Amino acid sequence: MTPAEIEAKLKEVKSTMGGFDSKYARQLIQRKEFLNSLK
Image (cartoon, rainbow, N blue to C red; front, side, top):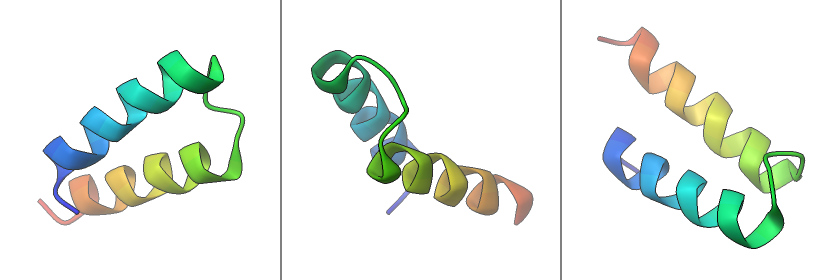
């Protein structure tokens, strides 16, 4: 996934699940941070 795709999914998760408490959301955030660290 690209950082843009992750960002879009995070917005979707936030609106449907009401936050980032789910394991899926935490994994997306972790992946985003990893990709940003490669830059």
